[in-house]
Length: 176
Image (cartoon, rainbow, N blue to C red; front, side, top):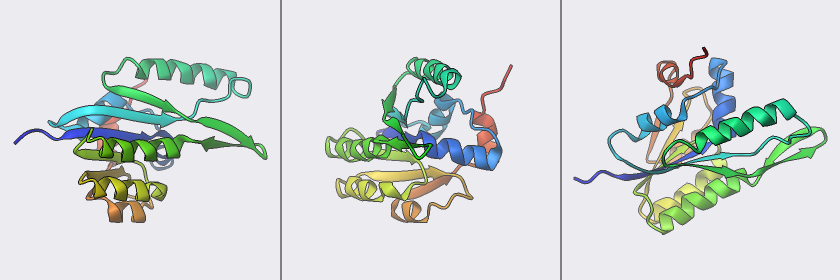
């Protein structure tokens, strides 16, 4: 039997905040993480959705983030998809990030780019996109943490994979 064609869709904000909340650290080796998720199947592409920091509001963070974005570009089959940050009442809100991810889930399913989508998020806003992908005959796996409240997302996906602490330790970028 031929290996399944897989596309991984990573909601950076959701993954980052869940890892930080549950493990106190969110420095993940994304290449190792995606390889673990895909296994022996064929990775078509891994998309990483994020919003760049605003340089004038956080020059050091912006500089570090740009270095990270450059490093992501060196990972084979990885693609960075950017939205933007918008300041509202002193708080930064991501704009376009989830919409871009949802559109890609659906358009890639319609274009028959993948057999299986792996969604790394706990955001129920992706439910309609996942249902549309399934209408095109695609399987969808959700990846989240066990304590994450992802009921609606997990209910529509064909399968859910929970990132355990043991898994996280394997993907952790060691300082030094």
